[in-house]
Length: 102
Ligand SMILES: [Zn+2]
Image 1 (cartoon, rainbow, N blue to C red):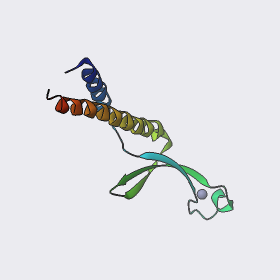
Image 2: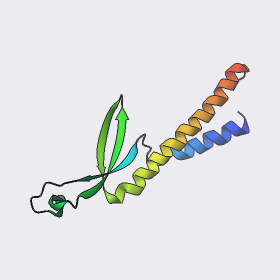
Image 3: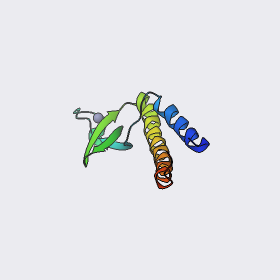
């Protein structure tokens, strides 16, 4: 294994050994809560954060409480980084097949 592949695999292992990864995105949405006399009935809408994950073209949304925002954002970022590392390692795999060396 080349030093480059070793380095990429070690970065990937580090990412995946954390507590989570998520293939999704965060969106901020404003909504009314349904309580009859709340300020949102007068146009001051509640702002909430939602995690959106799409599987087989079906999007699902999940409310994300404030105290989870950083964690969820971290997991989303880690997914992207892991995905990029996988692609880099995949390219090395291609070269191995092309050059007939495993
Ligand atoms: Zn309200």
